[in-house]
Length: 268
Length: 266
Image (cartoon, rainbow over all chains, first blue to last red):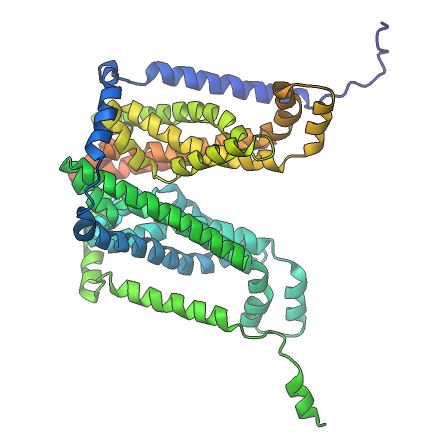
């Protein structure tokens, strides 16, 4: 075997800087895991009876307390549905105008772009449970606080994704409409809307799907919906009711997923 | 034939779609009906504004006393540890899970089984899952870690399976043609194609786990959630504000860092 001449170029996938950056990241990640494993407080005494406790949990849950459904679950389940749906609608109403402000091709004003982006980031970085805490303190416990917290958490999500869809809209149709002197409302309705409609529906459906899941826990902090029943059942240690509520939530989530994928395949 | 009849025969450029009009009005009617159930009356709104003002008044200035800061630091560190460990173990489990759910690699019985399991894992909010783990393994960080592992596996393996299904089959065929076994196909043909996206998913999930690890404490799953909820229930709104500020700062910092990391791995 002969040694390769020095002039032959060696092909590598990454530059040295990239390789260093990558291995640094692995080291940092490993260090973080080791630190967490050492520092995290786990009480071993609790672990000894974990299998027993788990078996006990399922024994207490089954059979479900089916009789509880008509008097304690049905109404709050409907309320959960309203919270998620109305919250999503409200979020869309608030987020769509903002996403036009955030889209740099529609609004050519860096300050307005920044303001809209700032609203989105602050909406997304606060968890919906925290929004719920705030709105319960303001409007008192109930579904209204739930709707507002779902809406405020969703503004950032809907606005960010819909704003990105607007920025990807093609210039052609819009320039054509501008050239024939169409008013701004027509440019929106016939230039932008047909291009972004699929993105709009897919974002709306995706967020609705997420909101159905999230609205089920808002009741733990008093913001209405099925979480209130769950919280009560947990505090009273009525595990057969807890089991029923979890089964109902599971059924609703699966049903939502089927519905959204059916709508998606029909209109997209 | 006059010009008028010609004009009439020409179909409009944007024909009205009655189904979509019907759907939109149905949606509007629903919104009006559902909002009427919310009992939002004008006096309640005014009362709400008043409460909001009181609430803000009690929030400011945020409480930066030393003992409170110590409590917050411990809680935040625990939330961070929960997020790190849940991401690590969750991502580790998602790797085989995602491969099992990919229809182009796994036999149908395996991929449908894995998909069903992923759907079950995804269907519950992490806070609800941690209620169950608090009962099973007691109060504390472990319950939160286990709950977030469940949601990590649900999310990462679903998207990872999609990434694997989208990969280029030619490289897999080429490696198979050399007589390589399944593990060699994975190492030489599959991983080089999908690893970058997988790391991206893992980093994204770390962000999401960090957000949720600040919440699992509300039901006893460890982390900053417990001091936050206690302060809220005691009407110590100035402490609540401090905790919220710290949470938001940490989340924004992590988003910045993870954005950088994803760029390195692209």
